Length: 215
Image (cartoon, rainbow, N blue to C red; front, side, top):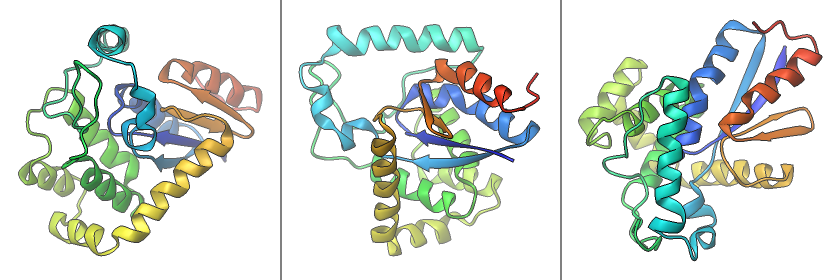
């Protein structure tokens, strides 16, 4: 069986864009996907946003999100709310982050139950597919119910095991940096990494060279 690592962030629209193809690759071909959740860049490397503001970064990026969504036939809406509390005019990241850590820790708990990709797919479709108030308990409960997971149990487990969960996510981040890149989505096959959802075809070409029968 082929094995591919996927480094993924819940705040990244490009991570959202690649997921359907990754799931198809896993479900219809002989490819194991090692799902590696990382904190968003605003948490891992806040200095990345120094000097970036609405005009130099966020508006051009948003145009590209809509363009890529159209090419892929996917929905894209600005998150309501954004998983990261950040001023889009100035780029300043707030010290108060009420959503992202709980979301990531819940996601890592799902990874530990071999449901990381499934949860990422459902929540990413909510965040970037136009679901308002995707962060509410009612909505998270419905996602967990769809995946046959007890929401209250896994949320409590995430809080109880928070220290270990943080270590697991940080371990993924260290692995990612050791590979040679900090961006997401990042797919890794053997000794090669492919940064961005637009590099999916290059990943497939590498797998084909090794015998993957991909249509």
